[in-house]
Length: 369
Ligand code: APR
Ligand code: ZN
Image (cartoon, rainbow, N blue to C red):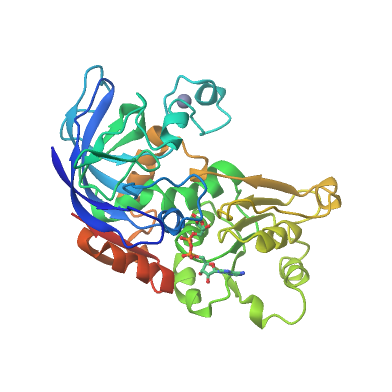
């Protein structure tokens, strides 16, 4: 079938809206009509050419929501008409990783997904006979996509696409980091570095679980107001702190934070986030994605004396199990997504959406079809 997609033909070039050919679902796969998609930094990172695993030509996008239009043989968990969120981290419930109960990093389709292909080793997208890669197993910058059944989360039918699409990445990443990875408990003191879409979700989850101090750190003081709306109790702009940031934060938390979250992707900040943790038990979670090849460092003494360094992908969430719950939280007013969506525009304006993100003027732009 013919579909409308924003195609990335080469690194650092604007995306181009094209009529692309899409093959239908095979056994165990579903066809999904994408209704809305967020534009996330990971899309921009791959488009920039800096991502060593980036493949071109490709259809980017991984933060979407839509409706099942057709199912292949053997598909049992979803049916035509179901609302779904595509999962770049699938959940097969059968592989060693899923069965461990210790991780969300399902490996069932990892190898082909990393090559921009469906599990059978082919792409369903082509343009005039030329193969186009899938991206993160999702490619939500296309109005129709094919996904393995294990890579869709069925959600309730009254969920608005242009908000819950963010649960496909940023919202779940931030909330999950608090709930699944750090397991923040009531009364804990928390420091969040970076108050973008991810950091704001860390803040609202910290508030939800009953954290005591929720300190936000950002170089941009304009982020303060919205972060307070999400539950931040103290704001720190490192450029306004006299002396080093780490002792300042240790002082503010009276001995160090119980939990810290790096939501920027800056390796220097990752070190600060670890070192402002409380001696004996403070846990620092790396949420932001650093550039390829970068390395973190600290003195091992920091770990010997009880601080813990962790990382999280997709907030440690098991997509098919956890994503529908987070959609319910949004629908029940437990979490705020509306204030994360600053602009909604048609897919035709995808390049403008990237410009807005680079200027830092929006938390998220959502594209519709
Ligand atoms: N110290 C403090 N704050 C900083 C610093 C710094 N050195 N550098 C950047 N910031 C702030 C920015 O001002 C911005 O408010 O960090 C925030 C980052 O927010 P966004 O750019 O909106 O990024 P976000 O979408 O939240 O993603 C954060 O997570 O998913 C990953 O790839 C993504 O690594 C990125 C991170
Ligand atoms: Zn699995």
